[in-house]
Length: 134
Image 1: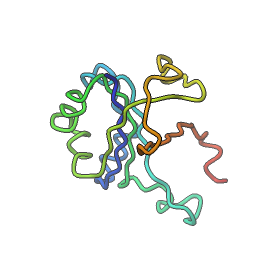
Image 2: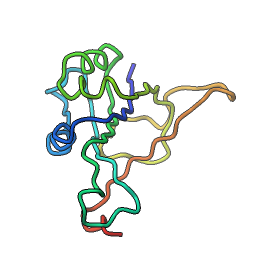
Image 3: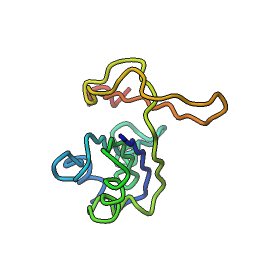
Image 4: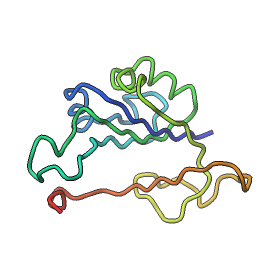
């Protein structure tokens, strides 16, 4: 069963910079199908300033083949060990509303859920570097 995870963690700036330049990829992390790493940005900070890009605050969204792969990543991978003390949630994919070039194998619907069951909606989008000042 495919598992998706979302991680938020305070990490050393060097770890955050490395995750942005060299994010986790399939093949380097066993059981990983896809990952997106991003540094959090501080709203209200001057556009071109070190305060804007917070390399020490990292978010990672990933798709894994199974729970064991997530556990291995958090225990054995250097980035995973940096993320482990932070917050993360494991999600079961239920449905999508659009297509995702990064995750082409996602079915339109993969499961069912109860009306009162909690769900999370995740939006994946890429911001172009030229749009950062806006």
